[in-house]
Image (cartoon, rainbow, N blue to C red):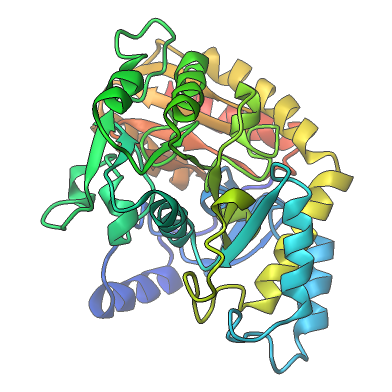
Length: 405
């Protein structure tokens, strides 16, 4: 058993730290009173010594779990480097070249990449690249979409009203994110493009914050087909679903399409906007950022993560372990308010009948030593590290079965 709770939750050290943060910082989207101290493999330890089985991967940012030997070696090597962070778009470094080469090996052919700080900034630069080519026209986004909290990305976000209230928007037109091929609005993009001049279409393939909704194949096929027909760039947001999370490098590979522009972050450790070279802004200075491609440690860790995913066959592991997880979770569907389990690979959502039940169960799971996170209005996301073992999955399933039923 990997999880072990030794104190009341939260423990005394955690309580003190949480109180300071709540007093002096904005109380943001903290889900439960966890104060992280360290971690190993698929286990996170808090400051009071409690051990939690982690099925969050820190929202997908830690695909190799914690204390992976190769990542620890990188950190050791860079611990003596006095220039571990530089102004990465004004000064060159070898780490930038290495991650550019590695990312180029897993994105579509003929793509270039601009490195940036975060997923929201990856989306910001994706839409800037599209605007540069197409002009300041409206963009298209989807219901329940989440693309980030910076103002440009937020214009195309529709997952929760609280994220948008009172903030200005770029011009945007919204279509339904269709999860069934027979949805009556499956062809809505064709009508919209026929009647409007559009700068770009922006969509996730599997929605993240919006609820772990999986797009229908016909919906994504239509986006690609009509984007081609009307000469509009298709931007696919792979910030959460990319880097092997679904058993392929990118979720769009399950749909046999490719984007014109894509956003990457989280598991890569840095943000990145990758795009077909025909969309290259060409003029220098159109895109830049002080810290973009500036954390040499993050870039070399991101490079190493791609190496490890390849060498340890973690794409195959994500598929195999995801199938085991979904099979186990499907056994509790239609019981105690659980209405659906959905997802691909190790990107799985559990839908509840009420938000209150979902929220209460998250806290109960936390107190039993299992970390999960919310998604959408009533869903719970299951996104363990890609390195997870069947033994760890069975341990997590045992806790979920006990708590959720």
